[in-house]
Length: 229
Image (tube, rainbow, N blue to C red):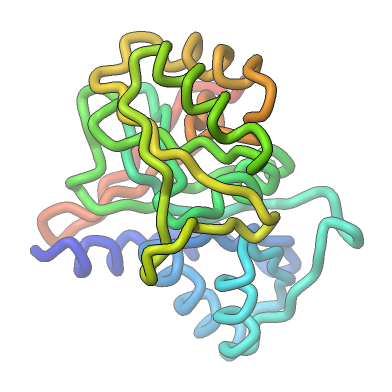
């Protein structure tokens, strides 16, 4: 089964976690886009929801598909968020941010009663770290932060867009992609990054995912954490 087929099957399964009347966080990225499209099908069939997108791109997609949207200015309690991930370890800790929206994604996830992650089987790993940990920085501090994170043991690369220019996030920041290799203690690394001035947010999501739906061999495997925070 191809990765895209696995993403699609996980995305289709994820919309069963959405109920009539819910406020739904809408993730960003190629996998989350499947969930947005399947949610739109349910909306056209009569499901009443309001979505809060995690990026301008997702906002445009959801609007084009007819999903009613709201904002954190109007609603601060989110029933369920559906999003993707770059890596998922056995404790359902995540690396997110390949799509560049992890700042808004973490804000929305933190306000959600349930975070449902959808992914293909290649993203389930024995430990985090093969994928880079994205770090969103204010441009003023970029060089200093790069030096500080490199001292933590990472290979640090400034993210560029498709035209070769510096990638700019929806909030006007830059992203450093930081490859640590095997991360033995993700929670400790997360705290070190959070304590570094100039870092706005990082892509380690610790103790946030409630359910991970993995497309695998024509089926969807459901992984759950015993408790949240």
